[in-house]
Length: 173
Image 1 (cartoon, rainbow, N blue to C red):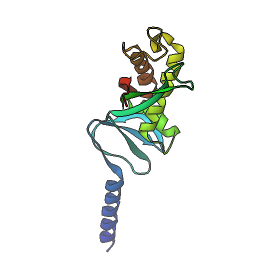
Image 2: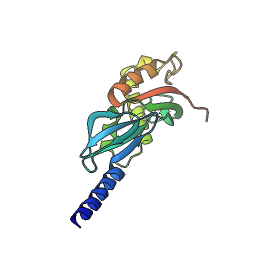
Image 3: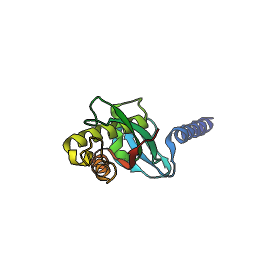
Image 4: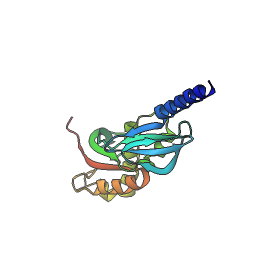
């Protein structure tokens, strides 16, 4: 009888670990291992992974391309009040370990909203620090044609937050 009870409880424990401890990281996604809710330095590649339930968990970040409409000022500094223009921005998360602190600092906020907010804040800071990259031909609107603003954005965003801007252009809608 004791052997049957031990076997049944062992099978139950294995089922619980299998249910809560097995995770699939899909193609084009990256996982970050969390220990007691805090990000570790370990990234998890695509595939099936086992973690210890309630001690370790894995947060999965899609490598999908996000398409966002960011609004900036077209007559003055990009982030000051004034007439707004929409920038169609294609971006993605390229380093989930660097993006994870944004998620941890804002629980309940969507990944898309966090990425958009960080891109806009970085764009604003760079347009103040590098006015030559954010203006062109004496025009107050951002210079998106020569790619200098995208280059500056990516240098700052990839290193600081694990986000890469693939394309930024003025929206026609």
